[in-house]
Image 1 (tube, rainbow, N blue to C red):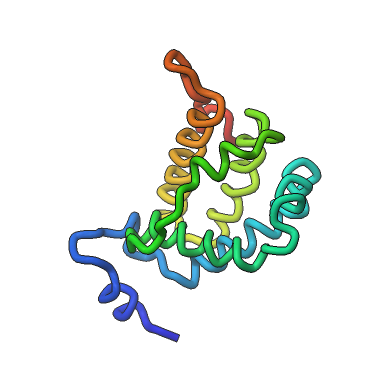
Image 2 (spheres, rainbow, N blue to C red):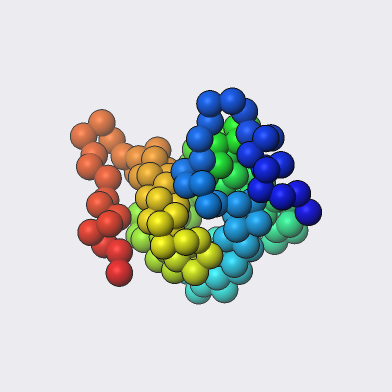
Length: 150
């Protein structure tokens, strides 16, 4: 298991993590715990199962790389999430609120009191970006996720 110095040394120069306390292990825990809840959710679970039933492990690995890129600024993720999500015709606008509603408590459980709000803010920015790509028009105002959070 690499220690924190190895994680910091592996990061490209000039890329500062969202918060210095965030580790790869926390990101792995976040993805595992969050997606367990997603797959159990009565609305989101069937969407994920239909698309990823036989590729769950590969998806989790991809999401760990994605969140590492977002939170630790590793630059490791090279995917294109917008086109992948735009193909999900069964997704409706309120699904983003469910997604964030599952994500926030997991983030609060895993990350420090200082880091958790920053992780949640990153997730809200991602939700906004995906929402705009899927449902937006040139005159759309995306939902204010913070006003809707509990």
